[in-house]
Image 1 (tube, rainbow, N blue to C red):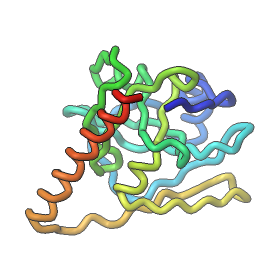
Image 2: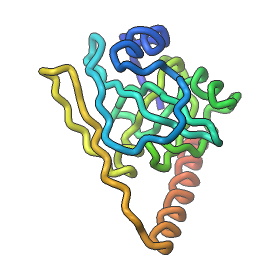
Image 3: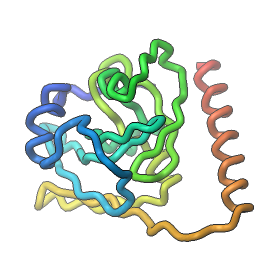
Image 4: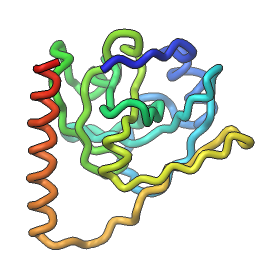
Length: 176
């Protein structure tokens, strides 16, 4: 998968976007957030950008994502991976993570977008997110369903589907 993003770079994430969102890029969080998220419309191509908590291993950080419904996969930049203590050299490696307190599969950003974090459509769909864009206000909202108690069998079924998705995705990448 290749994504072409020419109007935003790593400096934008660290400086301009951090200022506009009021959250320092890759700063630590003491807990996972799970509610709705407000974002901004930014750049020459009106990119949707928000900051979400990401948990990998026991570290929780605020990561600025470009919401890209044209990308199936969610990607983290090398800087983000390193912030979690991961040195990933294999771009086909699939990493288990939690984004906004929801299960997620992420991969290393490569090619034209190697410095950026992409929130892909698979995460939006699997998390039940709804996207509401207000271009006239240069803002948007990612609305997530409230977390409710579910049965153990439902959890087991979802875990099985997630494992199958991971295996199918890996096969797709290897066939490439």
